[in-house]
Length: 291
Ligand SMILES: [Zn+2]
Image 1 (cartoon, rainbow, N blue to C red):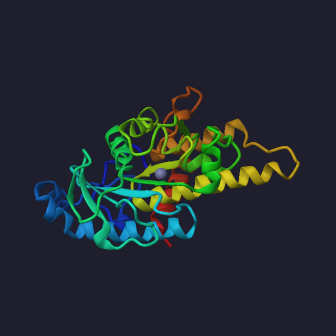
Image 2: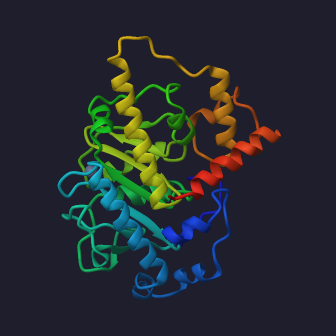
Image 3: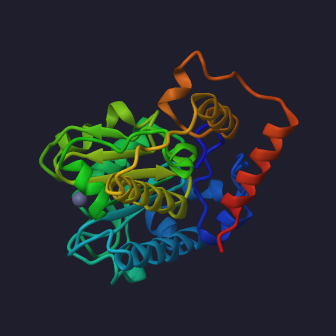
């Protein structure tokens, strides 16, 4: 989920549990992915682990009603040359290992029997814009999509989880799905935003693993829902004090999380206090705990 860590492309669910969110060096065997043929890469142990992770996350998206029909798509980098992605015209609740396609960074299918999703171009644009993006999840959660059809985002400063893991979400302008113009709408926002609303469509989230990208979807959807519910209570909203937001931002900077507010001069530079280090350790441990 970090922005500044060394990219670890070859992490499946099992590998993710052992990796430090503060960044780990690629495993020696992982480097070989770039040196073998596409077919060999597609049948590598790393690819098999990623397929399991994509299928598991696809089921979660479907069970949580974040995808509808054959909507939504999931991808993950495999080495620096390849991407594994979900196919077109298939429910994310019904994925099988053979359904997952291997593509290059230009969207050419190199292995797999099914056609890739036309929205893979969106994912590839994110990978090109940010080397830290290792996995991408796109879906249509109802509350988040309700915001997407208004072109608005929930306000910041209300929900700690949203502040820490996402920060301000971006809003990409509308374009026809599946086109190159659609894919390019997110380009200006990728570096500073791990969560982007796609106007009149849905959301897209990127992170260091498929699982963490799905977490961002959950956090954002919950934030949208909670904000809408809170407005119905009839009481003024209670915002987190600005100095406490700056503490969260200092923590995010230390963790390497993206947030457009980190460009503000008011955010403290790299913190060194023992308390900040303790918080970093706590969040890092939380990211490693997958249960
Ligand atoms: Zn879509």
